Length: 294
Image 1: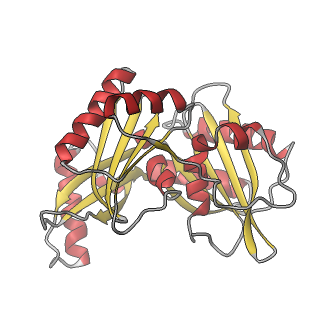
Image 2 (image 1 turned 120 degrees about the horizontal axis):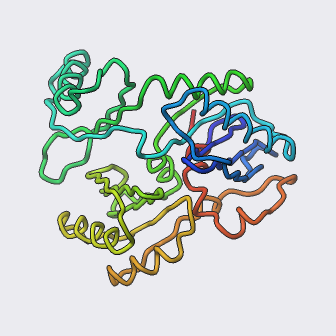
Image 3 (image 1 turned 135 degrees about the vertical axis):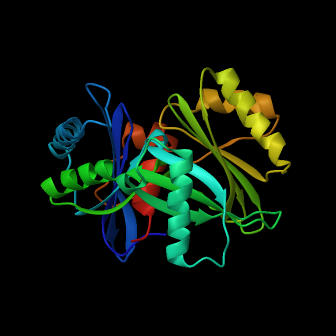
C-alpha cells in the first residue's frame, strides 16, 4: 500500500485542512503526524489566490508547531470539485479513439464547459450484466495548477490529486469475494460507491438536505442494486457516530466506521493527540491519499 519514501497526505475541505504524514523508520512505515486546522473563512475553490493564501497560512500554523519530514505530498479535494459521469464503451477502440469518444460525451453532458480545461481520469467498472462501462472523473486544470503552485512555493513534490471518497476508500481492505458499500459524507454532499470484490461496479452522488433524506437516498440506492452487501462502511470528515446510528436504524444492518490508523504503527517521535484518539475516521481521506503508492 505504501511507497518507499516519506509522504504527506492533505485532505482539503471548504472549512479545514487535515494532514497525515508517514515516514520510513527501522525498515517499515510509521505514522508521524496527524493534524487538523480550521480555516478562518470557507474556501472558495474557484479563487486561485485565495486557495494559496489560506493553505499557506494553515501550513505555517502547522509547521510552527510540528516539523514535517517529507517533501512528497498528495492532495485530496472535495467530491463537489470533480465532475463524474458513467458511460458505455467499446473495448475495441484504440486509446486515441476512446479519448475522442470521451471528449464527445463530455461535450454532450456538459455543453457549457470545454473539455480542454479539465484533466480526465477513466476507470472501467465491473458490471454483473457483462456491460462494458467506464466511470469518467474530471477536475479543472486551473485547480490542479493552483495546488501545484502551492506545492512548489513550499518545496513539495506533488504526487497525486484525487477526490475525497476515492482517497478515503484506499484505507479499506476489500475482499475479492465480498461485496462492499462505501458511503462518504462531505458536509452537504454524499457519495456512494458499490464494490464487487476490489472493483467498483456503481457510483452515485446526492445532495443532502437533511439526515432523513440521506438515509432514504442510500436505502433507495441499495434496493436498486439488489445486492446483499457483506460490509457497509461510512466515512466523514466531521463527527460520524450520529450518522452511523441513523443509518443502522434505517438499514437494520451494522455499519462499520473506518479507522485508517488501525494497521499502521506509530513512529518513535509520534505524539498521540485528540485527532488520532477521538476521531480517526474523519482522517480517512487524508490517510488514504497519504498511503497511496507512488
